[in-house]
Image (tube, rainbow, N blue to C red):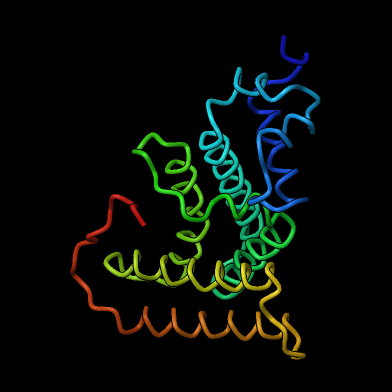
Length: 204
């Protein structure tokens, strides 16, 4: 019999916490079973496979990151909102490096894949930020990809110890925010009008 109170949600949360502690690459069903106090076969009463666990952790991390960004941008607009969203994502990645790593390199299995759904929810705060810049509809996908890429990249580099020079990382982060802010303002001014958005399906 599985341990009382143990369900899929509790297992995924425990797995995410363990991944943050030891690194996602070190997470195994055996180590997870030891963490939650059961034998490894008992986990499969709730989790279909290691891949299923991977996707559930990724969906959890994407939802948590989206919630953090959404809370941070409340009542903000323009550079203020951009900085708040970027800072919330960076703080999340630094605090939860293992579970965030689970979000990388996954191929969605379809529109109902929890990772697909969580990814769509995850871009909501960034879309809200970009709407404050009057980004043209036909440019929104490009802007989202650009903003996600730069802030995701910075946070991951910092989390992995990629910044070794003595210059303060926080100052570099503020420089990056200014750079993106200026670029978005310029894009809003120069974007052509009257073209339909080719990416309304949100597959970004």
